[in-house]
Image (cartoon, rainbow, N blue to C red; front, side, top):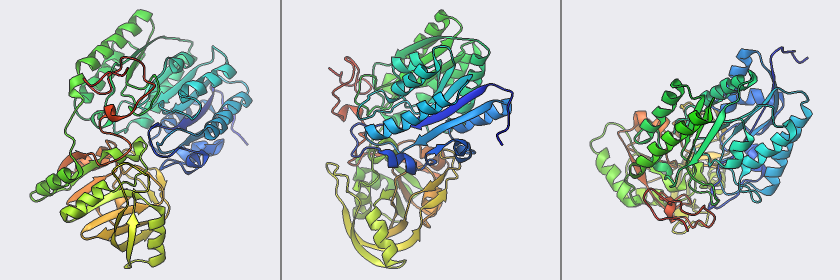
Amino acid sequence: MRRIMSGPRIAIGGFMHETNTFAPSMAGFEAFIEGGGWPTLSEGPALISATRNVNMGICGFVETAEAQGWDLVPILWCAASPSAHVTEDAFERIARRIVEGVRAAGRLDGVYLDLHGAMVAEHVDDGEGELLERVREVIGPDLPLVASLDLHANVTRRMVDMADALIAYRTYPHVDMAETGRRSALYMERLLSGRRDAKAFRQVPFLIPIAWQCTGMEPGRSLYARLPALEERGIASASLLMGFPAADFADCGPSVLAYATSREGADQAADELLEAVIEQETAFSGDVFSPMEGVLRAMELAERASRPIVIADTQDNPGAGGNSDTTGMLRALVEAGAKRAAIGVIVDPEAAARAHEAGVGARLRLPLGGKSAIAGDAPFEAEYVVESLSDGRLTASGPYYGGARMQLGPSTCLRVGDVRIVVASRKAQMADQAMYRFVGIEPREQAILINKSSVHFRADFEPIAEAIIVCAAPGPMPADPAALPFTKLRQGVRLSPNGPVFG
């Protein structure tokens, strides 16, 4: 029997997808069933159990709400790996279930949604704005509606207008997702007390490459330190969103949000943040190496290093829409004769299946990866040794995934020369050391590690790295967004810091 609560009655749900409109494959409904490294699509009470003790916004919200004695009405939560557009079928099926769940919940005191903020569907450019508006139509203009957002959200005016508050992550790597859910619950409490704040929204006039959005280094570190300082001055909530610079629609790009008791206070805080970001435009840059340049540099550093040299294969980051199967970095490792090197994750279900059929110790000649039709990329054919096999189930232990139970499907460790490759059947960003260990590779013992990730890997790998290098092998997420063939951006946006202007 459902326990009767005396606190406010809050409906909760979530629908998360980061859309790279230039990526090679879309996210259908099955992608949200699988979860892409996150919990599978969950409804009703199963939503709470599936997302508990995981670094996710909804987990932090639920923990805070339960401590406050709120009566939670779980609707639906789901996520899929970043990719091209969410299909119309998937968007409509999921959005309909969330909206109808809110409608069927009866009397409510508020609604909380765990969103990404950079979702583009086949038929709707502003995925979150569309969902928020549909929910708002059901609950009316006065019921509190709060959403947590990813730091990479491409915020639209529609999103700001439909929600009472949008609360964004403050770290990249995103180690504060659950904390953001907790801050969202505290803001919901503010709304439940009858307080309504003025909103201020500003868009930054240039796109920021994701490799240089990291909040652990400058200029991100100093910019994000301004947010709690603003709140200490009396601003109810402040957010800086770096944006996801691979979504071809008008509102792609960074933005700032401020909520305050007065219009003047909100505007002043937003203008201050915007000015600070613009002042740092030139600082959003860094060195990017070609595959062979990066590998040779890593080999040189490894000769006198006591810890691994870590390379980010940034342009095939599955956290930015890549299929995690390009082979440019693998090819460079082998051609350079790298020793004690490992790369992951290369997603190739056919290769994983053949390894499982052949068994540990077998030698297989096969074309690995390179199946996404990326210009300049191709399968890497070689003779591989099957070193280990796995069913793909693991628990991530690092601070980014934060305890997520991952299911990567049939997986294997293949070796060519002294290079070991994590091969899986389902994609997830290489952002956790456990994603090497589940196939028998100890990352600390490698001289070189190549991770298909842009920044999230830093949370778990920076502590063990002697140095970190960023490389640009062929892939669907250019290190410089100015290389993308945009057609829908708003006029005047610079396509990179101090870069060309759209339109």
